[in-house]
Length: 141
Figure 1 (cartoon, rainbow, N blue to C red):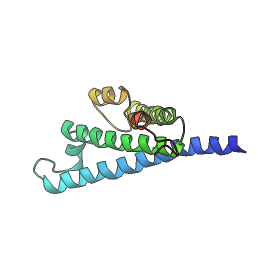
Figure 2: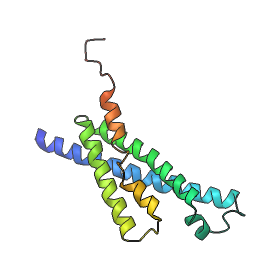
Figure 3: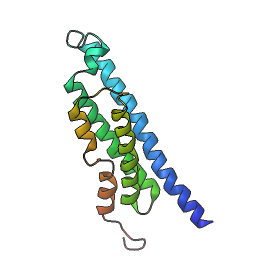
């Protein structure tokens, strides 16, 4: 029974991280777009101009990177053991979905956006950083 619980916790931690990444990314990048359209109507008169702006794409990548860090940390935290492996599993799933989106041309992107997404994902960094933190053993305070 312990093995089943461990497997479900592992899979659940990665799914929770993926869900967190997707929701936060959609909300934050959507909010970025709404705010830019509202506060800079001369620069971004419509969503078409916004979607082709390199600066906006870079901002979206930066926001998504922050979301990936949080999702990686959350995945590692929920997993409870083998934190780096779980966060790396999240990073791999994240990269596969991202590459499929870009290659399918569902989201038209210039080459530099693809290059940014093909570099080592940041989602696993939070798990690695978490593993590097000193852990106090019970009774050793």
